[in-house]
Structure formats: C-alpha cells, structure tokens
Image (tube, rainbow, N blue to C red; front, top):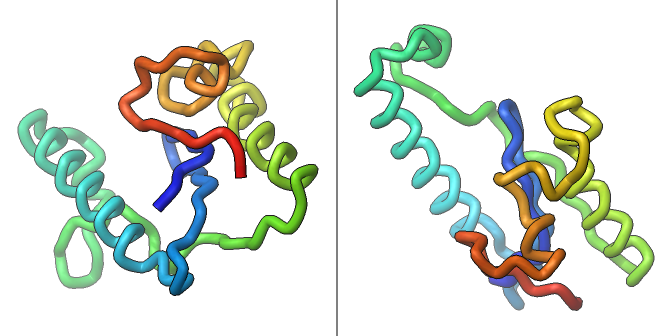
Length: 126
C-alpha cells in the first residue's frame, strides 16, 4: 500500500493511497480503522471522556467510525493527483483550524515540504 497524502481532522480523515494490484482496500482500511478506534477508545475510557455516551450504537457498543466505506474515487491524471494532494493539505485551513497547511501537525503537508519527521512515510510521485 502506498500512501501519497493524508490529513486527520477532528471529525473526518482524507487519504490518497494507491490500491493494491487486486484493487482491494478492505484489509488496509479495516486495519487502519480498527487501530485508530482501539487507541481512541482506550484513551477516552481512561479519561472518562464526555464523548463516550455519544458513540454508543443500538447494541450499546462504542462506534468511532460512521457506517459506510467513505467516498472513493480513481485519480486519472497528474493534474487531478496534484489537485487532490492540495485539497487534502488545505482541509485544516478551509476549516479555520490553522492559517497554513504546514501549521497542522496531523497531515502529510510537512512531509511534502521536506520534513521527514512525520510518523507516516509518504510517496510523492505516482
């Protein structure tokens, strides 16, 4: 799995990835979502976070992710690729969270700017 760009927002995430040869992203997404959910729930339970009751589903289990698989699309040109990378990195700016993409710690914008201290290594070319 190649990760090109990413951003974690307070209420959603964006990823630009290359699907495996078989086109099946399910194992990758399942592992990602499961790992994030377990980490968040463990932390929020230790803090007795106020959000926990809001995450209960009809079976009284905590659900971090909304139903559905997200919104996928195929990138068909270098221009569209560059556009999507820019869109992903500008997300926190458009949301009013920071003034510049580089100010948001939870994205690949710094990596694309040459900072290799990111916890996620990205590929910059298709």
